[in-house]
Length: 85
Image (tube, rainbow, N blue to C red; front, side):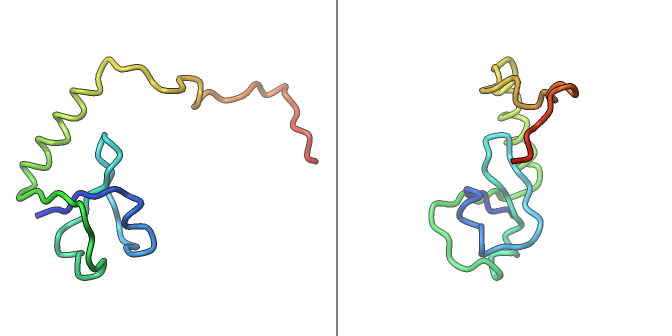
């Protein structure tokens, strides 16, 4: 079983490995809840198969959508000098 929650709700509470869903939420094994404590507004997925189906469904829904900032990952020109201050 897995717990799906907004990443911000785990910050400062959970220091293990978090996997991110296409929608930005993260999931952790439910067994890790003993390290996290009480959380509100979570989803629980019953099996790895259901989790995989959810991920695939979200990936399909995101196909064909434009990036919010398509130039974000573009490397700046090497000739451009940055003023150190």
